Image (cartoon, rainbow over all chains, first blue to last red; front, side, top):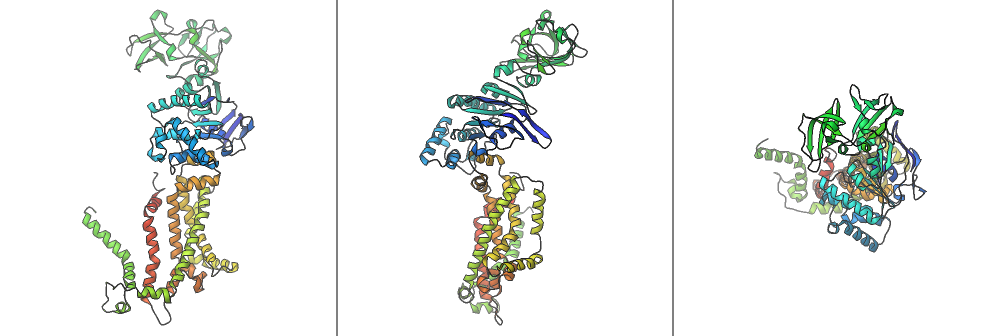
Length: 353
Length: 271
């Protein structure tokens, strides 16, 4: 996919998108709603045409081909099963259109049904299925085709939380088993980080970062990725670096960067910077070791984790408690962070080193 | 109306008011010639079938029934075939003029028949299609298409686009997606539109009268209207023919009742 863009009237929803997906790779398009990720997927499928740019599958241009000539399968958010057909017929539909023989159809449908554990449902109509079962049928309809690429458009977002977690594991297993090439759209970072071998973060129609889960999480390319990936979100503090390169002036409120920086940032003196620290790296500590202090607003106890919401001046912060005694709201606590866990951004872009 | 008794009485009164003429000619059709002219009139007939035999043998009723079936059937098939394609485009591809076009269709459907009778007659005359089945079918298709397109568009819009896109990806062409996925899902709409067109064509009198003057091609309504001779008024045969003409419509409607009810109410409320 090269130099792809899409305009609806004056509205440019995709701007110069270029990326590659390797054979057998699980690629995630991650982004907030309205970022253009679904449109991108529909363009790959051929359901919509690009305004500019080209798409190739196996080095063969496909952007002029109709969807059915691209050898792709698409799993819709709404599943889009054929309501007037049984599950068997839903699975067999594409094979029949290809004029496959009855024996081959039965074999492939049975195989897919076994893989997805829906053998008992083959005679039912979609309306007699639960959400999870419909999801499996939609998946099965894609699997029987053995397409070059699987396209998934937020396939799990209509399932309840438990089912979603279960299907996520199953999708990963399925991918390992079929070694299929997958492009998967989601706004759910948990899905993206657990499933994706390659994650492409999109925002407002352009690619923010391409990388694996660890890159995206540990080295966010910009403040958008930093703020979007991770839950609760990363603490981001905007300010102007003073002339010593050691203090960040956040507007009537100064943060001493000395404890969190290995070297002074003299070359950046006077620049506007954003520093980012993930909640799990911001730990409560004793007063004398603290880097920043804040007043506790509330404590969120999730069982495995406890997050402390606090504020320092006008700035809201989130920290993860080490599991010791939890501070009471209204108390003032000190927080510390290891220098290696501090992210620095200038003009929204990551500063390396 | 709170009390069921009141409601029941009102329903019966309305039903009687609407159905009385039907009962009258149905009862009349089963009378014997003597009962027909008896004074005071007999309410309950002796279930004599002489008028039916006479209508079929002496008045060529069978010919008219066959003509009506051919014309109404063909008009329905052609209207739905063309209408489905047009409605599919209206429903799926949004042009700037889609809604204006639909409104114009509706306006056309409101034209009084007499206003277009002359032009239609002239066109069919030039084509040499007067006194033919296809001439009458062509007129009926033209007259019922707007309504059919309107109804079908509503139904096609209800079929989720993603289901159709799934079909396109699974290997369908646009046309295949239409008849393998969209049409089956819009079946209640097809049924409703078909029945309305069929009933319209079956009952239509005015155009059937002006387009067809050859008795061999007369349809039921015109045929029955021409039963009376210069000096005769065959009430019994007319009643028998009317009963036979109405029965197929009643049967069709009863058979497809559920589909039609679903059809007419769909689109009104998002389901």
